[in-house]
Image (cartoon, rainbow, N blue to C red; front, side):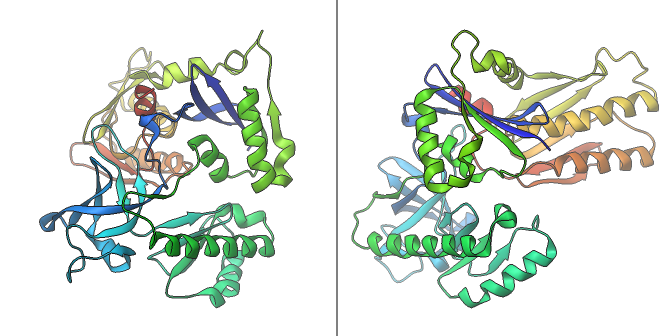
Amino acid sequence: MKRKLLIEKKDNIIRTYFIEDGDIVEIHSTSASGDYADRHRLGDIYIGKVSNIVPNIGAAFIEIEKGVNCYYDMKDVSSAVFTCKYGKKPLCIGDELVVQISREAVKSKAPTVTGNISFTGRYAVLTHGNTRIGVSSKIPRSLREEYKRELSVLHNNDFGIIIRTNAKDASFDAVLEEIHALREEYYNLIGNAQTRVCFSCLKSAPPSYIADLKNVYLDGMESIIIGDKELYTRIHMFFQTELPEKLDILELYDNPSFPLDKLYSTQTALDKALMERAWLKTGGYLIIQPTEALTVIDVNSGKNTSRSDSEEGAMKVNMEAAREAARQIRLRNLSGIIIIDFINLKDEENTRKLLHEFKYFLAKDPIQTTLVDITSLGLVEVTRKKVRRPLYEEERTK
């Protein structure tokens, strides 16, 4: 698969476009000025204070700054790192502890925090609260077993290690060196936390466009094209420190007479990704409507010339809709519960075939996406892990 990354700055907004085999498959945006909307980023680590405990939902609310109360799952208490403890119960109002943002604010919902802090590197993730040694399932089995065997000597009661997909092409020495660096960072942060005051930010996550570069799998990446000199300088510095062997894939595109958005039609792609309607080649279309609780995708036959009331016509539209729905879910970064209303099929074998194909397309998404089931009303239920704000939310806050 041929892959490219475009990063452009326009109207004080930095947008990242992931391109696979010539198609834009992901769009992310962030404010270039780091304003309030982009505070409390995924991965930020704070000393928070327990402001409320709600036993009937097994949750607490923790302030990470005045007026910013975050949801906290009480299951995390067993591995909590307290900097100030007031009562004998596992968690008490007024307790101060180290927490990390595990989910950014979405719409009216405040961020979610966890006491199971993690430190993410290029090849590995160090996890507090989960002490197992894990390896990405996308790494070949023989290599997975080798990693587990070699790293078993590092097993301890403080933290665990997860080997990322990026480690597939790295040397074991490089991976081990990074793990040692993450371990040092972990112990330094835990130690420093004991001397810091409440609401201190112990670690600030990098801007999302840098995090994207840190997390993206570079296998098959032909180039990272940057349409702004200042951005290019920052990203070049990041690569010099983190990925010096990949410096050659960085490109500065600086042609004011024919800017990057014209060359790759990025503005057109962005506009389409924010529209409610997504057209299919058969003439049908999807209606995509995010709500507070879930996202609904409705499949319509539209201008399709074949008889949509026939099994064959409905199946043709549905098969294309399955591919496009999976593409739109990733492109728009939709998450949580997603309900897809395909055109009704009478043949159970066709329904099984449709679900099989849909599951195949969803599996291409790097974020965990699961086809749950089809309801008695013929609605297909999908869940996708919430990591960051969906595209329409990112754009709305700019």
